[in-house]
Image 1 (cartoon, one colour):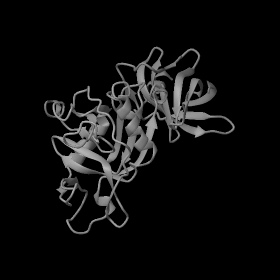
Image 2: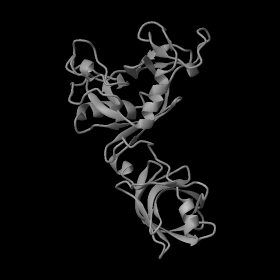
Image 3: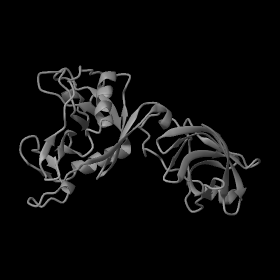
Image 4: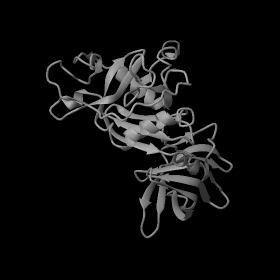
Amino acid sequence: MKNRLKKAFIFLLFFCSAKTGFGKPTVCLETNMGEICIELFDETAPGTVENFLNYVNDGDYLGSIFHRSMPGFVIQGGGFTITEDIKLASIALDDPIVNEFSISNTRGTVAMAKLGGDPDSATNQWFVNLADNSENLDNQNGGFTVFGQVSEAGMQVFDNIAALPRFNFGGALTDTPTIDFDGENLNRDNFVTVNAARVLDGQMLNAAAIFKSNQLSFPVDIEGLGKFNVVLNLSASSPQWLFSLDADSVTEIAELPENFASFSLETLELIIPSINVDDQFVVSDVVLKLIDGNELIFLLTSFQQ
């Protein structure tokens, strides 16, 4: 049974990124090029983060496009959407915010765009630094306010966007990344768009496990066997909650994160300190009991909400 357990454990990383820190608010944007998660620096740029979250929570960025791509420099968005009849529409502006520059514009950081010669003019547009732009952007117009950091997986998405062909549509869209655009027959799918956005708070991020799409994923220390990343599939929810392990999916890890689960070979209990449930709420002190060692079935026995 020990060997079967050792083979059974796998972990599905929620952000796929060691750089996405725990305990800070994070915004995840679903795009047609992949998911981009941004850890927000609410302590060093509180006003800027509040401004960004206002646009996110108001749904202003849904359907927005990344309208400017400068490979090796920046990718910019947050300013425009494309209507159903393929016309450019500006996102409504909130009041400009006070500049809060303090963190350098290095690769992966997210900063506010603003008007030239006016440090306190940022509104809805933002950009990600594709390279270390500190020598340039830290030293002009009061410095460009960095308010977040993109996850490593998110930066791969941005690198893929930067590799797309660019087209000059005129106006603010002189360097717009396009997808499969032939230069004539334009449709919405030719743009890199934000299709959904969600905000995660520190409690959600700090959960030891993630339950999403009927999968429970987490790192675990198995007594006497080692450290593993794991996924449990929900196999039944009535009359009891049962989870099964995929014996063909195994990843052994060298180190455990701050929050992790533990499994006792003596009691056959799997204890998970906390679980983020569908990005909606957190349950804690979760206990699952291994009730079938051959089929690797776990029964949910207790939890706190």
